[in-house]
Amino acid sequence: MTEPTPLVVAVIGAGPSGIYAAEALALQSAVPVEVAVIDRLPVPFGLVRYGVAPDHEAIRSIRHTLERTLGEPGVAFYGDITIGRDLTVDELRASVDAVVYAYGAGSDKRLGIEGEDLLGSVAAPEFVAWYCGHPDVHPDEHLDGADAGDRRIAELVTSARSAVVVGVGNVALDVARVLVKTADELAETDMADEVLASLAGKQVTDVHVLGRRGPAYTAFTTKELRELGQLPDLDIVLSAADLELDASSLAVVGQDKVAARNVAVLRAWAGRPLTGASRRIHLHFWTRPTRVLGSVAVTGVELERTTIGPDGFVVGTGELSEVPAELVVRSVGYRGVALPGVPYDASTGRVPHAEGRVIRDGGFSVDEYVTGWIKRGPTGVIGTNRSDAVETVRSLLADVDAGRLRVHGRSGRLDEMLTGRGITALDLPAWRRIDAAEVALGATHGRLRTTLAHRVELLAAARESGSPV
Image (cartoon, one colour):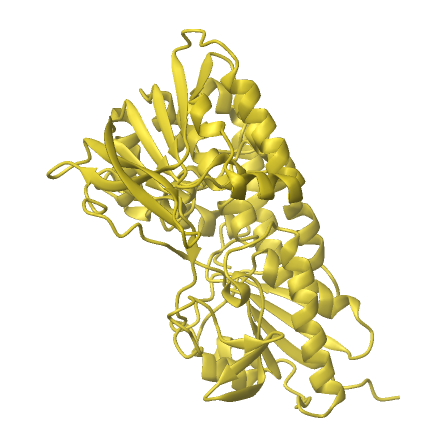
């Protein structure tokens, strides 16, 4: 009996959203499928590896679940393949039956204030990528002693005594926590050796976290917020006046249990006497930055008190103050970027779609789908991507069932095209060799693992018996 022809789907992006899409396809039984999960990096897992703080191992361990999906029958990992360099979107579409875009949001939102581009002003996505060991921020030339891009952040971290973090989400808390923790407190993580070395030379004593609204409007999870209060030799400084709730804040706290818990935690901190600790995190609510101070490098930030205007929006009161700082980390959100050949709405930073079906030239594109942050924007937690991917895959399967998306018998075409160009993707066994190399490196330092931060190191570890993959 002839085996049914499989539906061949390429997923661009091996982060949670892409792998959850592969999982939804692999677990369904209505249509036989082959899924190619493609990523430009040599390693999978996206923001689970490069966006979750290294001292949050419980969250980072989600990679084990994601890895199991990459090992499912009919699912294959294609690492170190860049769309636009190795093949175009049109070429990829011609080699598979459908494409799911899941490449996330790789840029940052801007503050739009004077001094934002001074030396010492860094976007949170870049700073997080640095301490997570992302190869984009740790270029290979650093290994040869050249003045590389990662040196800039390392020098800022080791020279700054005061830092300002703009934003009140979990990423802002991660940044603040990494800045105040000592190298010894981070030594059990999988941080790259050079990152730990930089943090060991850190002189930061004060971190100011700015929220333009009140404490009821923070995007912290309570668990992450409480972690700050458990750090040794740290005072949390905040004004009791900032914790007085206006009518809109009371309404939020009355409806949102997380907001209510966060406000309770903050009020408990406000009632604690300062201990004279060597490190301090200052939480400023109803405060926004209006100007980053300095001529060449950051020397401070001008702040303005805010309030809710008559139309419900945040407005400045005109009351200004300044805080000294040598480092500013802008944590006001991620933003999706355009991928060559893929429809993109610059006003939203997303791929236009309806229920995951990509809209191209005013209508639905019959073989293009989207999921994750590039679909809905940078919102939700990691698990949100699973339900999002299920919606997209449901649309894809409905299109197959309705005859709109056809199976063309394209199994093997992607491999043929890459082989014809002399391109060898890194597969799941290659990732497992990288994984083993990181575990072995960590063992030499008494750690569970140590991240390899440079692409040349990752590629070398991916080789088996010293031969090219």
